[in-house]
Image (cartoon, rainbow, N blue to C red; front, side, top):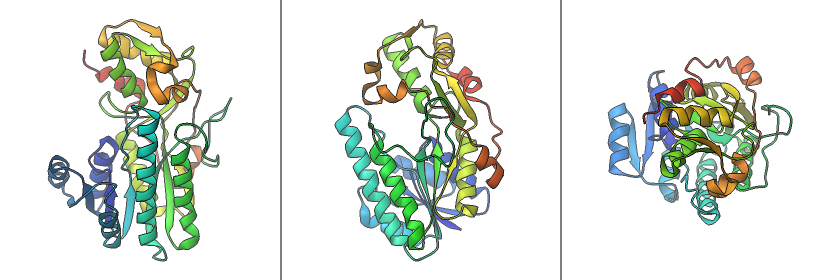
Length: 293
C-alpha cells in the first residue's frame, strides 16, 4: 500500500514508518518542519508539508493514499486549556481525513489509548471513557470508528500509558523529565497503581497489522506489559539518576495528575489471538536501565 501517515517523525511514528517500509509499503508522511522532513526522507518516506491545522493538506494526503495511519497530536499538557486546544485540533484533523476516505473501503488506523477499569485489566471490548481531561480524544476516536458504517475500514490501536524506546517516552518519560527538573524521582498516590507499557518497535508492528488486516470498527491493544507499579518505575528512574524516590502531590503533573494516580492495567490477549501480534522487545523496567544520569 501507499500509506499516508501523520506524526511520522515522533517516537512511535518513526518506528511505524520503518516498519511499513520494511514490509513492502511506501509512505507519504506529513512533515511540519524542515527537520522532520529531512528525517522522514532519510528513512525512505516521501513527505508533504503541513501540520494538523492544514486541513486541505490532510485531505490531499489521504486522497492519494491506499490507507492512512493517524498518529499526530500536539502533546501540550502545560495547562487544561492547552490540552483542550490540542484535542480540538486533533479532532478536526481526524474528521477531515475520515471524510476523504468515506465510501472508499480503504483503511484508516487511528491512535487511541487503553481505558481503565477499577480492579481489573481493561480489554479491547471495553469502551473508552468520555469524561476527564482527555475525554474529548475518546469521543474523537469513537467518531472515527463509526466511519465503518460509511465505507471506511476504520480501526483504532490503543496505546498504553508508556510507549518507550531506549529509556524514553510516555508517562515514564515524563516522570524522568520531572525528576531531572525537581531533583526527586516522584510518584503520585501510594505508587501501587499500575501502568501498562509497550516498546515502540512492538507497537509499530501492531499498527502495520491493523492497517493490513483489521476489520472495520475494531479496537486493538498494543500492550506488552500489563501493568508495572508506578513506584517501581520511579525506583528505577531514581536509581539511574541518583535521586531520592518519594511520593509527590498529584498537582506536580498538571492536568495529567488524576490520570497519573489511576490504577490502569490493560490486557492485549484478544489482539494477540486474532492478529497474531507478539511483542519481542525489552519490557519497560528493562528499557529504563538505558536512562543516563
